Image (cartoon, rainbow, N blue to C red):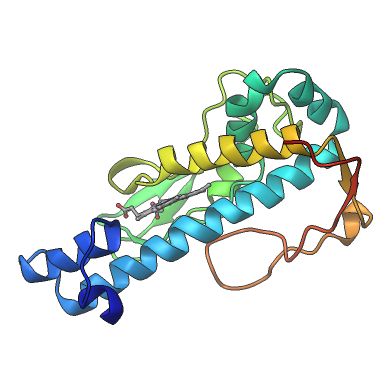
Length: 209
Ligand code: HEM
């Protein structure tokens, strides 16, 4: 931040720093906004690409469908986000009033932590929710949140997903998991995200341009 402050340019970081001088942000708000953008914008997309690749490899018939028709990539991304959303939990909310949700009473002032992953597997909403199906339609989900705090980066994340999966399928004619699927380890930490610790792959064939 100090480096950029000394040399403001035509980029997002400089624009945010300018906001510090026009009264948009306090110093702490500026720092936390930049941190939020790095965490919310990087880890989520990296997890979407790795979890999605693992899902496709565990469902070879779906991978074959995608290889045969790259026009399915946007729908596949929505299904990956529904099935294995990389933000497993929404951030904490505080109930503004007494309420009842799914038969559970929630008192005004209590912390509420909503599981977005669980919403993606709701049998009242999805036909056979445990089936990973990239042709599912409509492929609505809550993996980017909902309402006032809906993910500001959703269009960018979708674009990055299209580029990542498009490039992967185009340039790697063959790849497979290098470990048995049940050996894939999920990061277990207190963050809101869900992602693999690593995705070991074995590649076949030459890289094409
Ligand atoms: C697959 C990728 C992504 C997923 C699954 C995801 C998920 C989410 C979710 C669920 C929320 C709402 C949290 C809540 O309501 O408590 C959120 C908010 C947010 N996301 Fe994303 N996100 C992704 C990518 C990105 C990217 C690429 C950026 C920015 C470059 C970004 C920036 C943000 C920010 C700044 C917020 C807070 C918005 C607000 O509070 O008004 N996200 N995201």
